[in-house]
Amino acid sequence: MKRRTFCQSTLAAGLAVAVPGCNSRSGNPAAATIAALSTDGAEIEIEKAALGELAGEFAGQLFMPADNGYEAAKKIWNGMFDHKRPALVAQCANAGDVATAVRFASERNLLVAVKGGGHSLPGKSTCDGGLMIDLSLLRGTDIDVDARTLRVDGGALLGHIDNASHPHNLGTTTGIVSHTGAGGFTLGGGYGRTDRFMGLAVDNLLAANVVTASGDIIRASDESDSELFWAIRGGGGNFGIATEFVYKLHPFNPVVYGGTVLFELSEQVLNLYGELAAELPNEANIEPQIYVAEDGARLMEIQVVHSGDHAEGARVADAVTKLAKPLAVDLGPFEYKVMQTGGDVFMGHGRQYYLKSGLLTGITPDISKIIVDHMSRDNPPSSWFQHLGGVPAQVAPDAMAYSHRNALLNLGIMIISDDPATMDGAIAKARAFYKDIEPHRVGFYTNLNEDSDAKTHSNYGGNYDRLVAAKNKYDPTNLFRLNANIKPTV
Image (cartoon, rainbow, N blue to C red; front, side, top):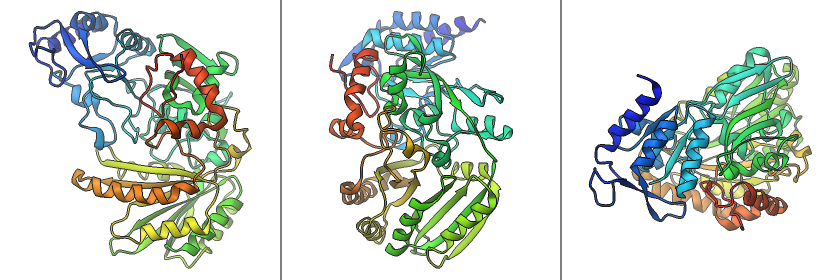
């Protein structure tokens, strides 16, 4: 059977039975339409004949709730949002499929969610009643060792980038969980353990192919559609769906120096950590994880990664051990991939995740006091820092949409649980913690946060009006709204 015929047959079979959650308004499986939701939440109807035509144009797979494979296709990383049920999942086989799905949604004003790796912490890679455009089949990579560039498909994961580049002693900035999608990670900014000397992911992006709301595929770079290129580097998924990225690579020894140093949590060690983080060379990355041990002790475990000379790395690590009397030390040369994949199981698919985070220019005594206070309470959330500064701080705030070049740290306050019944109480504690930190922050990382219109506006500062102009041009109807949304004004 030809693939197109197979896809049409699969869809026809799905339309021949009642579709849980998005049946026709009459409830009759033989009715000519199914119910869905528009971009503004209104109930709309999609003609089954149009779905049949879509299947005929589609090289990938289309899934409705009654179809075998739907549950797997709609699944995302954060189990808090597993209850959501898109009316249709379009699992794309190529960029043309993405464009076809976007045109289908645009013509019907259909709510759209975009799933790359599916790692959106606020759950914005899924939706109820809309169309999920799934890029998970698009995971190819092509490296040009001589040019030091890497091309990846829009559904690639961060582990694919590391695996393609590190064997050639090359690398670019990727995040801390290898099964994170490259797309959302990159478009929001892209923090990682090498960003202080390689730059953020957006700083290393050379070009991208973007499917805009009109269904056009645009090559965005400094030489072509430069305004779109400016906007996607930090503006997230507001302007379209990226189906290809090209990254700059840097010389990189995949055997780095570092490890972990464990301390008892105190205001003093936090203050000294902040001072050291501001002084270190760009090759050094030191990031604390703050948590409650099984015996109730409040601990601060600093992960150390030095991506340069190992002797210099040993000196940096020694400085970390002298912040206070360590409870445990595990330092030396190690494969970078070990730390990059070390959290993959703990941060696995299907668990309950909730995060509040904020960018800081440093650690003040007031901030240390707030952290120790909240971590000393009963059953507190865990917290952590991402170490920023270095090369990214040398980029002008208006060079691209991402503007937070003065931030030294990103503070995260996080809940991870396997029991949904515990989440409401835990979330309340995370929000109370964040409320006390919020007056000290200078912005937030759009990939991680819940957002409001006011916060999104202020988060982009002087870049916001230029982002609105780009939104007006490339997505005037706000088709791509499940993100830290920049609203069009046309």
